[in-house]
Image (tube, rainbow, N blue to C red; front, side, top):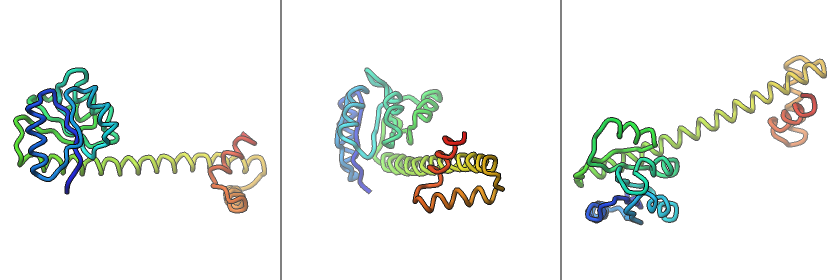
Length: 187
């Protein structure tokens, strides 16, 4: 699989070597930056499929850049440092893979595959969490509206729920909206 990749490293020789290796294994480098601030600006402009960042750069380090972009792009951190603190900070910033310098061509493909697959899994998981959270909020609203109907109109639980359903179907409006209206009216 081929990806459009953005590279940020303050050393031009590293960027050049990385570009050559990435292109050799079939990827396209869509942009480069020599510091973190430039990287953030260009990443938003170029919209790559993957970002490789040096951990130490002027202006804004790779971890700070990752913190800003990791929700939209899979990020690989490139570094000559292997301190545990840096690895922990990188993980907290949303980095999906870590490559040590000097990097070798046989390490690039696995790091890229790992970063992309972790990013996809994390994105899918975030989507599920958001959906479940929304469903829970909807249920809370419906339960509250049901309770109000039970109290105000002296209905039992089943009758109150069926009343919400009937209004929803009759007006072709989601039950959540009906529940919100009942809460506003009777709450």
